[in-house]
Length: 460
Ligand code: GDP
Image 1: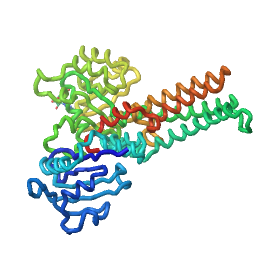
Image 2 (image 1 turned 90 degrees about the vertical axis):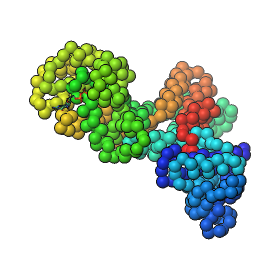
Image 3 (image 1 turned 135 degrees about the vertical axis):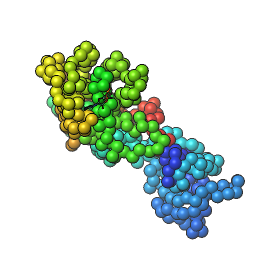
Image 4 (image 1 turned 90 degrees about the horizontal axis):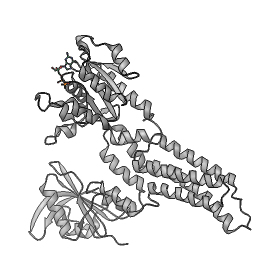
């Protein structure tokens, strides 16, 4: 099928050194040739692919030079989408990139939809669906570890594993079909034993893949965290102390709201997403100050609770109220202000929240913060397993597909065990194969595709 030519600005809108306009499709070269005048006076055809050329973008209707740019062309199939592609590197900012995009559109391209470049890479067979999804995870990765897992996925590590299982299922389906179609021929018999062995083996492999799904979800989405405690125990100071180290690695970009930058804390590679930082921070204004009540609502949805108490104070009514609400949560108890000494009844706290760890810190003096990070890390890793090695499935969509595949295989198992005709087992095994194909894109439906690529940004 002949695709139309698409174009978009691929860099974020805002002031920056450069901005990049991307064009993909059959008309890309024709359009670029019309607009671009290389300084070296060679023709567009003479320009080598994958080589930058300096030149001007010229508006032939309004007769003026829009910007001095670098242009690079990619000849099909050696491009991101596998189609002919052009990238124009103009000066950044709002005007030049937009103006150039408009010129490209006026000359026959259409504006790309979100993720359409990546979608074309998938449709044209350069990458499979899980690899396409990895692209967005790379763009959104909050920590180095999350990035590494996404890059592994882009390299095809997950697809490889899934495809191995799909191939194994297919081999047993083929065997069953051959036995049905050519019962007289000399082919290996599709005995219940062989089929069952295959089913067990593949269920086990799928379960192994799922083992790290919890870790994957956390790496991909972060772990939603609430800092709770009575007024003045030091919640806001703790947040600041936790954010302190992060500031060293995150450059503050003028014009970006602080809340956005500071939403995630990187705890040894785990993205910790602090809910309602604004609420914690509004400490000056008593009216704005987050009420314990409001924080308690947030606790319900939180995956991690940091319960701060004043080490130099006593347990009060509000503490008891909070404790009632957080018993069941993944929780760390933080004794803050330990620099002043410890007055609080530690034994009592332990009795009220049995099995929960206590970390003693001074947010003000920045003491114990590293230990707190260790404790957060341990708490999570103990539950979801190591984030270090092995293949980590991160996407909920993949986990659901794996679950459905396991269910189908279990159905198949039951049919074999009950001596039902083996073509019935084959139907269930094929169903499992199809669910797995949703991960790689071998058997994916259009609506799922649309939903996946809608999440992308324009220009990717
Ligand atoms: P919040 O209302 O829970 O957010 O508490 P704040 O973080 O605003 O802190 C309340 C007061 O306690 C402030 O005056 C802080 O300087 C002080 N504070 C916070 N952490 C510590 C600490 O570790 N040691 C001491 N001595 N004071 C602290």
